[in-house]
Length: 206
Image (cartoon, rainbow, N blue to C red; front, side, top):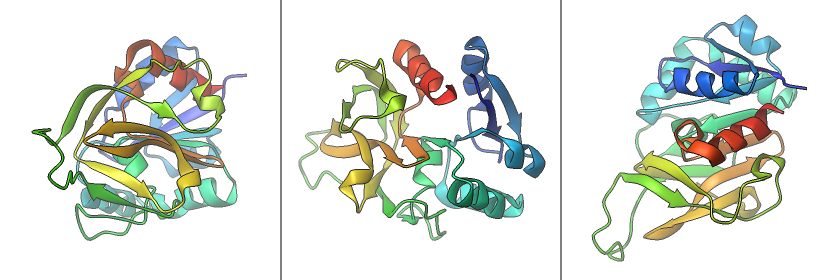
């Protein structure tokens, strides 16, 4: 059964592209900033493009943080964070001064290659492979050769290695996907990642 999915609209994210991909999968999907819609969702997607502090400020201004916390932590509603949305799951970011949602024991840090980057540019932009580190329904049907589309200057560093679902190498090995119970995040953009991205969204929807 396809769930009712609410894409949380807090003013920062490529929402229509995600919606279009899910609608092609016959998913019941809604873009909304309504607390009522968020409260009744079977699944949540927290997208995000932009600055960490601005994102947290928008969530605060719209009154979403208590509702999201109840849905995710208390009700254990499945949530998928995409790019900045995944970073917001952490406790804080080096990008600014705001506290994150704190759902993962993690921090968001800027790429630092310690002199070993060999000319690699930041942001990390383009297609790159992931290495899945533990079994997960959301990764079903995604082969070892799978690549996804990235655009980011910061990445999530988990204090608990068990929260890391997949890694990618770009000068360093970083967490390109995380998962703890009902909380899943991907640093890449599945809505821009063709076949494997669609498969990941389908797995989440089902």
